[in-house]
Amino acid sequence: MAEVSRRQMKAAVVRQAGQPLQIEDVTLEQPRRDEVLVRVVATGICHTDIVVRDQGYNSPLPAVFGHEGAGVVEAVGADVTKVAPGDHVVMSYAFCGKCRSCETGHPAHCVNVFPICFGGSRLDGSISIEDAEGKPLHDHFFGQSSFAQLSLANENNVIRVPSDLPLEMLAPLGCGLQTGSGAVLNALKVRPGSTFVAFGAGAVGLAAIMAGKIAGATKVIAVDVNPERLKLAEELGATHVINSRDGDPVAKIMEITGIGADFALECSGRPEVLRQAVDCLGFFGTCGIVGAQPIGSEVPIDVNGVMIPGKRIMGIVQGDVISDIFIPTLIEYYRQGRFPFDRLIKYYDFADINQAMEDSESGRTIKPVLRIGTV
Image 1 (cartoon, rainbow, N blue to C red):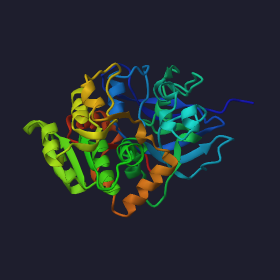
Image 2 (cartoon, rainbow, N blue to C red):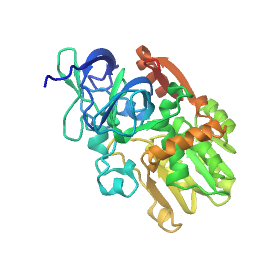
Image 3 (cartoon, rainbow, N blue to C red):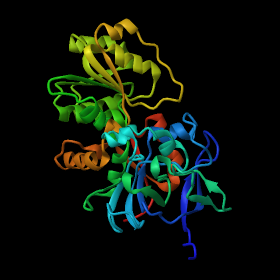
Image 4 (cartoon, one colour):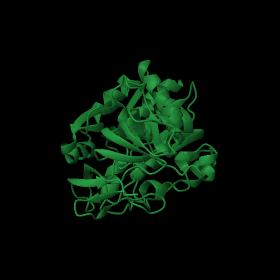
């Protein structure tokens, strides 16, 4: 049988660490038996895309990144039953589906998370994208590489979403927004009447603030250095805000709570802030870590300050959620007016991807979303 022709498309390519992405003409394989070909309508830009661009994580280059994609199913492999051509989908993180973590309901903590999400290929080592000269480009970033007009995802990591909501708005649900809200509602299990602190009021932190309100926390505290973001945090549900440039945030949290926080979430990706998130906890408090830091980052911890009060420190990936269940839940919260995540988004044309990344790094934009195609 003759080989099916490859698909032509444009993709944003990272060729050198820390350098601007280049929009290039590339080609993409047709879907394999368990894969879904998605025509990308939009994709969010996440802090992790910037970390890998700068090689804070050692994903191989040259590569096509992007992992908050949303679009329309164009074609499916022979074994795919979950979605069909024409379906609207959000793409989330990839997982093997076979390891102990996956089989016990924690696919975000798949034991193959690094090779399957950051390895630059499928788990079998194969690559599906080639540049204009026929040379391979590393792909399958988070199982999607959605900085492109087309994406090959696995059946595992596509989530069908309602067609009456804009795909460009839904795109960031696949990573940053489910990470912040999932960390609160699913991993930390913030309870009614408790105190919750989000360190960092970016997209992840503000999603966590909204989720803290949904969870029924009576004190929801946002910590950041950006006054505009702190103002937005108040509008989205924070009962208290702290600008850490104005003084020691740990002391201020102790003043607000009297005994320390029940829950804290470190969303900034800064080691010194993680120490503050641990120090602000009260007895039996729990600190979750979601902020991506370069590989090898270390944080000094007061051992007795953790042991004696019975504090917990929890690593959290993607909110430890099952996206097939959690993303529809977030959409329902949005419809009810309880999770207005659209207020975090600013849209950019695909050609302006480098400006969008710069605006994200500088804090000018909370959640950049690239418009890539049309429905």
